[in-house]
Length: 358
Image 1 (cartoon, rainbow, N blue to C red):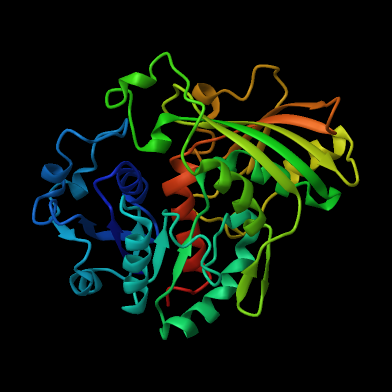
Image 2: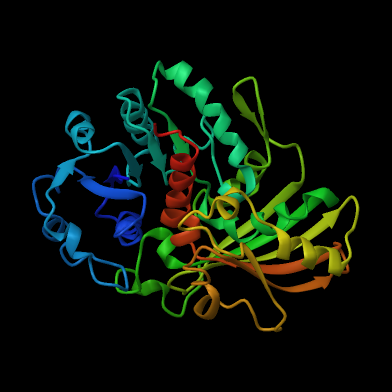
């Protein structure tokens, strides 16, 4: 079967680069178009990136000599690809307009950006948790006046370190959650070379991150009603988000109170057995084990555990009863794989298998 052609918008940035490392030799998709800002348009990908290649692996040769297109040239992109991934650094209203223009041109958009995360009929998906939210695409297409075009988005990278673990425990009705996230510098699209101020430093603020970390889980746990996503009413979540001197991997320290307090054995069993559509369908980027629990007191660690299952697995450890809350634990996820490009590729694999790109 011929592969489905895909374009990457924002291909020169860190997440765009990560997309390309994941899409090289992908079993479903073939990259046939790279797009970025007007200043990169017309250059080869190698020239456009220059010294700014940020991945640990070399630039894939298959893309190095491709000519970069202007992301605003939707007509040319439509000639070259069947759908697009989008990861751009622009004002939110400009991203919103760009993605909607692609969708209206009948080019499905799988977005890493936050611009459409609260558009009522745009699904914001962690495929193992709320694949059913893709059902709102029908209503979105009606609003946009399209037959193929739509937008689907992935949630913020920070929540991937605790939302999967909590999702496995929803039957016990969590009522209050306190989470502190310790977020890697790649979440800001940076390396230590570009951000030397982060060496031997901690910054106790990440703009806009706490609101996302408190509100986006409620949308993931929401329900589809009358063609829109209605967010969940509980639990109440409060967070602090801190930038730490780590290259990749977001860690979260989490405290939870439940309406029906589970036992430790029930929690560990729920985590071990938690799986979803990606595992059921055997999608290429689905981790065989979504949530891995470490018994060791000093795990999970970013350096040791962020690459679990190709960076798509979520790690949990240090589960203990708490004096103020019921339980506490530590979670870890790879922020540019599970939390960004990898999560978006997994959504696209699900959309492909479910027929949304047809």
